Length: 114
Image 1 (cartoon, rainbow, N blue to C red):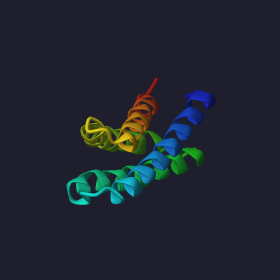
Image 2 (cartoon, one colour):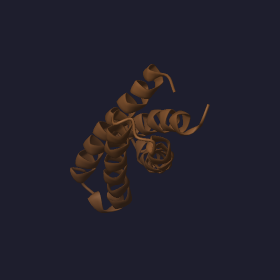
Image 3 (cartoon, rainbow, N blue to C red):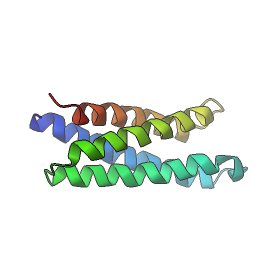
Image 4 (cartoon, one colour):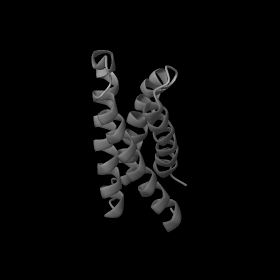
């Protein structure tokens, strides 16, 4: 994989982790936080896996593709959940879903051998 594509995947993972952490924090500040439990859990899981994937890729690990496959799956699940709340006007969930979809796309490219 070309260095630029590798860097773009790391950048997408870092951006997604940041968006997910922000989304989780904002969800905790919502009035009816109980109905956001699944969203918050996925936000936290997604942020963790994205940070891990970025770190492993930065090390040039032979396991990068494997971790990116898992990262894409978690990002897609998080995006799907956040999109439900984005339809109800939660901008932080919309922004998170967008970052998750971009990260999932980049990780899927990373995980697919040339």
